[in-house]
Image 1 (tube, rainbow, N blue to C red):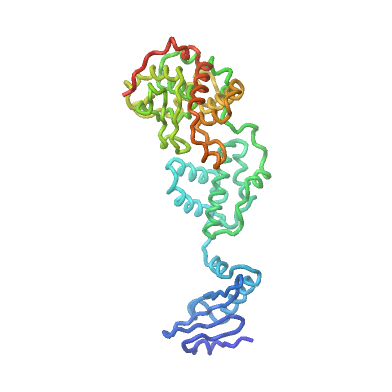
Image 2: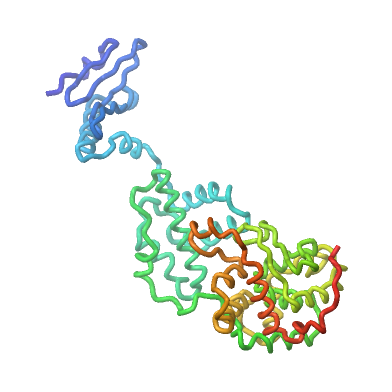
Length: 395
């Protein structure tokens, strides 16, 4: 039976006064009063501050709060954590996006951070923005993704990942207790996406005729950049940012700094005869200094410049798809070369973390043989050594 009364609490002297069932009134020498609940959690005592009297709660309210927390403690839960959870102000999804973006952006490139926020702002916030982040479940995510799931599959998958990142961030802040719905659970409530979510690629058997057609045309920066992209199996952005100081003509290499790489790891590309011939043609664009394939006013080409060369040629595929063409060619026409070599040529990570730790070689000799064969296949006229011009190191 409770021992305290409102009058006793009001007139209590400094010290600790028990009410029963682990509830105490603590009075400091200054006269400040607060309620404390004592419970057991994992065999250890926990003293839980409930709030001050009378500013925070009355005796009746203290008993109600103590009863609630005792019940949680009997269930094996951490009563302190549960008490603190009740103090947390849960934000809306839109507010959580802002907070998650502000934190994640500290370790991201500006471009990625902007894409993260803009995609959620455009596709998710209109539907889930006002919903409390702790109330968002599988059905809500499906609702947000459904309009773009089949029409814009690549974007939709990125948005799904970004929703999960926001919900994971929210859970880490204590704004939600439920785990983030797994991708497989979300996908079950959505239509099957088009079979290929990959970049459309020119079939590798058609690549030589495409390259031959382009070699017969005027040497524009966009055309030469596209040809160099094909011959090195590189990403468009890496080629558009390539500079002459990255090229070692004598060593037949293109060293791409970590800052230019998607993986943020420096990568050395071995240059075949055909790629070197394209570089020789490109010297007239910049006198062998600065950007290899400069655009207007000496700035880097836009990604649309290379795509336009494809469109003008009547192709509907993507520039990035030439990497797939290279990989398909390597698998079908170069079966004696280990798959790992082709993956490394594409600057992909290979093997498990343990295997990567023990793999000290970048397999450069094998990559060089593979890329030379690719150059001869794609551009046989440029791969003929008798046609290769003697180069000097670029300045």
